[in-house]
Length: 472
Image (tube, rainbow, N blue to C red; front, side, top):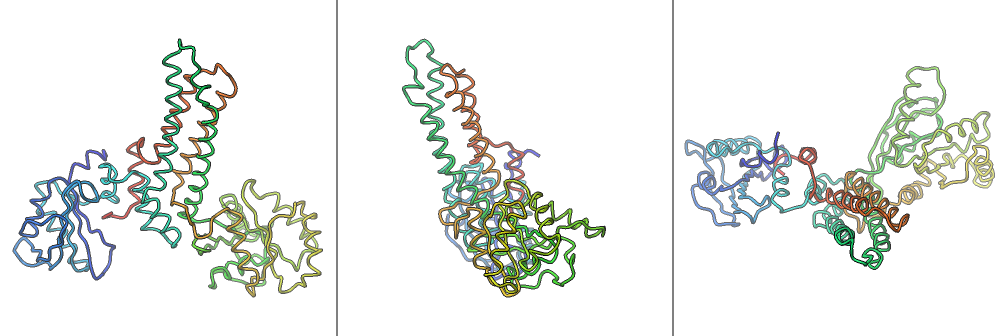
């Protein structure tokens, strides 16, 4: 379906959440809605003024008393004429009003809005760029205060401004290369005189800074996936319950009690964490438990952080060290690992410390970041929370971070690859083929502009806006 062709029709939708509420809003957006506004209200509405009046059905009966607001284009959310009708928030009365509007607008092809269509029109009419449009949905969906504040920064244009600043520097470099291509007969090395290599390195550094903020913004939006891993009966389920403050997982002394993943989302200083308790990692002849162990390894492979839990009371137990070493060898490279030494309430610290030191060697591991815990008593939980944030580099409270999505992170990474290729061409050969250099810079620029929507195919727009709620 052609999105741009669809946007020629006016659209209407209930803009408030489903269910009963004190106030409900029905919104219409399109071209030349003055006649529709007069038909539903019985009068001409002053622009951007709230008017209290009755809204009637086809027989003249009153649907409800409410407020009508008319925003003539281009001074509206969508950039088109927008009519908003605010009435009591009952589902039936809202549906009656929406049906009356669709009836009155039949001649002008008024139809129900698709999810996110109002915001998509705001983007297409230049009221928001694509990154700002996405932040509208992120603000609505924010699950923490830090995520909401970061979404507000993105909506205000902080991410877009950072990307535009990078693009401006990249355009300057493109102009230098194009000038050299256009005037090859001139005895002037434009690129050397303009210090193109250094400017390209400076641009890489600036892009890296934006990348770091964007990765944190994506984590604030999507949360960190922390997987609890370890042998059976090391206390993973008890730790999940302690972190969640609720009895989510069954805890028994029987090894293999947890057969499948158990998940819970929590907050640590405004950062959402999705904690996943997994089946104990061991060889088993039990078919159900073996499937659970396979799912545990898959969850570990997809984790942002692995919390590898150890049992302080079993460090010298026969076969324990060998099993720990086998698990350590199976952990994915590149995924941060935090080691948790559990059951500290059952072990004297002075006697356990030398055993832990020996355990690192027995497991074939270099001592890494670790915390001592008692999941049963809650000891060490504050240190654990701080270590999880520190290990992933997330700023506390998300200050200075703008909300971002994985597509933004990927676009910045692709742009960095093009800049790397361009710098490699310049550094490797003084007579580098300038057409290849120009192409790498062009591709880097185009990739950056995908973030704000300057270069965005229709199918991507459809995927982005389909995730919005109807009426927004």
